[in-house]
Image (cartoon, rainbow over all chains, first blue to last red; front, top):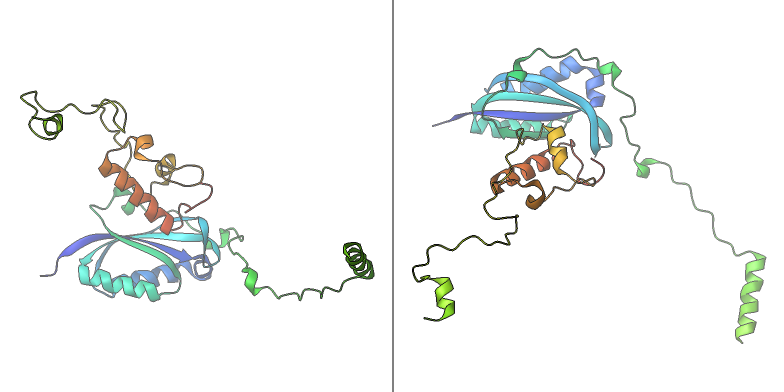
Length: 153
Length: 92
């Protein structure tokens, strides 16, 4: 017998995708849940914030918190689906005791264009490499080396 | 009966052994600290109170939590770290 459980799922979304089309992305993500026949109780933006460490070279991210009720099998299918969905940088799915009252409050206004721009870390490996200048011993160093040789000899 | 047997088994009618006076977690009989707020990975302000400046979790001796609550704290911090809400190492 399939048992329905209450789950909470925190998703970390890529701000590049959020800036492109926030409403579309949210719909897209919630569709991943409803596709597997679960009942979404609440799906709202939790916070847009700076990350404690860069994830996929992103310094900031948008968190979405989803509460849903569904079978264990569906939860596993959703996990697989989220793994493959590129705008989802990280997700954490846990079983929940109850849906907090704050989950049903209307979402605060969110303007993706107001996200600070300093949200991208340049990868050092992607910068064009400058060839190091060849080390040519100058005349002074050569004579010093010769002098040392004489002194030792 | 030798002294060794006395401490390990029958205490010769002296009743149960008292907890050690030199307990690892302070004086005997002290009740564990009860968390004031839920130990949840979303409750970052509260979790940060139990982390060092480098982001390490305080020991039970420092938090005073029961074993059960200390495990909840550790799990909450680890979940928050995974989601990029708290650092693995570095300034909290």
